[in-house]
Length: 128
Image (cartoon, rainbow, N blue to C red):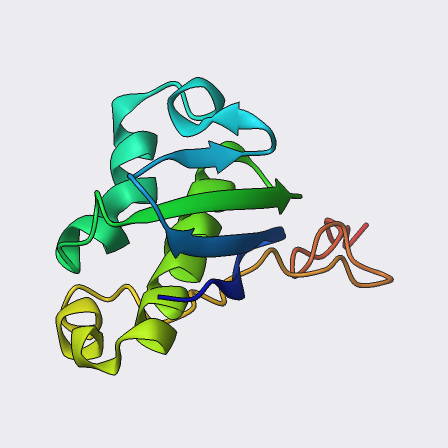
């Protein structure tokens, strides 16, 4: 098996991964993923694509992630791993698609517009 480079995004977080044959080590920004994502739900999100494809112990993953918050970063890593697994073995795509792991969640914070208090909220109207 060869190595694969892919990227995943969620909100403003961007994850670039390098997936190659190995023993299941996941490194995020130079740290073990359990150290970088300390809570169990975040660790589950990161490994979800590998567990659905039943390839947890087959690959080593090196991740560079930046931007966004912790959960957005975890979901960006999940998408990048899913895309890399599909690139290596297209037969796992239906299983990943069924869990919704191949689709990018493109919801982002809407920008603030001029003449408004927030993105859509107008300033309070005063009749008198």
